[in-house]
Amino acid sequence: VADVVADAAYILEATDQFSDSLKRYREAEQIYRKVLGDKHELVAKTLYEIGYVLDLIDDPKGALDAYREAEQIWTNALPQGHEDLTLVRDKIKKLEAKIGER
Image 1 (cartoon, rainbow, N blue to C red):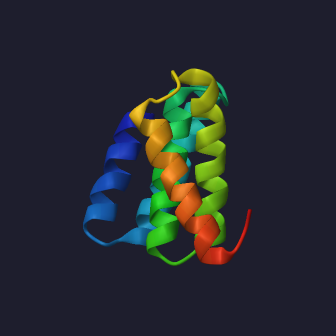
Image 2: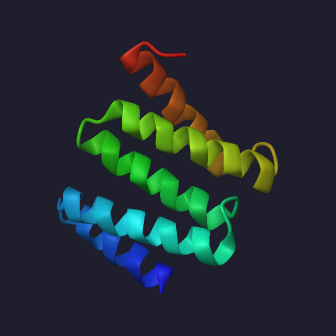
Image 3: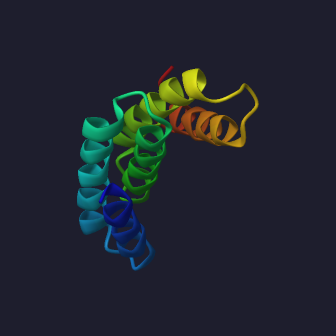
């Protein structure tokens, strides 16, 4: 079920329906958390997508929070140097620079 909801969120994102996309990603996140637990890679992937949409709608603080949680999960779930870790860490650095946070 969560996969279908996440796919719908992606389609909404791709058609610039960011508010609806964000709602669907958050719904998918909650389903993944209930079914797979808070530290699962799919929770992190969904948090990454939430961060991406928040960044698109100019909510850098919200995006940064989502990216940081995704990084925390991926740090424990993925090998160092994994492309998802590299990508999320790059997003975090850019947003920290943008909003002047460390």
